[in-house]
Length: 396
Ligand SMILES: Nc1ncnc2c1ncn2[C@@H]1O[C@H](COP(=O)(O)OP(=O)(O)OP(=O)(O)O)[C@@H](O)[C@H]1O
Ligand SMILES: [Mg+2]
Image 1 (cartoon, rainbow, N blue to C red):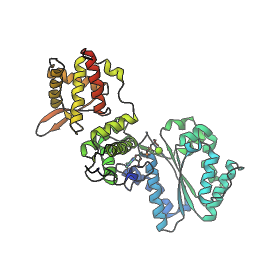
Image 2: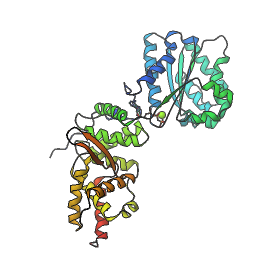
Image 3: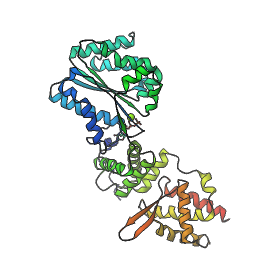
């Protein structure tokens, strides 16, 4: 049989550094940022702006700032305004201000010597360079908390006030400060704090439906048509939602699941590929947890594992799993328990995080419970459970 083609059309669209053209569900924040910085396109020398972007892990802080940078740069180019957006991750410089400033100067003057200058000297060189080039800049200081933790109030004060001391000269430098948690700002003394807290944009964690939109967008850019079904996007979104609404986690899962699909030459990203991807990122199954389950909980879970091994669906109706459970019971010489008990098993296993249950409403069937196996590969689960049940039934 001829090998399948890769499921990927353009893997680079899932790269962490890729900046998409559109940021679904961040349009409002993008518009607000454009408003804050629109003076750069009208009267750049008259003003400077400081904005804080805050939000939990993977809520799009970095990509939103970069998007803004790209939008302003392209608008400024059209108007022949010399503008640079410079994005620096402070953590890469261990939060030290001097090397950060040095790096920024080298964006304009690549041969600027690395050592021997104080923070004040490098800063004044930077302003001089901007004056010489008649250039304006937004400096985005990402993971700014590492700078606060390392350098404290003094550095923050210097950063924001040195420019203000250039009396009578044009304003050239605006800031975007990016940090996960505003609490670190409370560590600063009052004057440093007051220089920062101008405008704050808080990014809420994504909901599941929002993650579905974001991930569907990436699927259409990165994958061949039809290789990632809707229910797989749904499953990944659910996982990313559980992981505090983290879009990065979702995109990473998508990429890994695609890699597993290619490795298996599947030609399609199946739910099992997603489960393998998850278990490669977070440890899924602890054996001790399985051993401590009751006999019928194990039988039920084995039925779930078999169902997903045999069916390429992300969600299984509980009624189908119940049928599979009856067959498993017969195999192990057990009388199957009632529907209510089966429902209890599903709830209990879901509370352990092994399964997930959702109630789906359909016009045809009304409300029905659906079961998914989010993070443990079905074949591994089946292997473990079969072995454990053989021992329990004294067959091994
Ligand atoms: N609204 C969105 N539309 C499209 N892609 C998004 C969106 N939000 C986030 N992403 C993508 O999700 C990933 C994580 O986003 P980003 O790196 O901006 O998060 P962050 O808030 O900076 O996280 P951290 O606190 O860990 O630095 C990136 O690949 C980014 O492109
Ligand atoms: Mg970031």
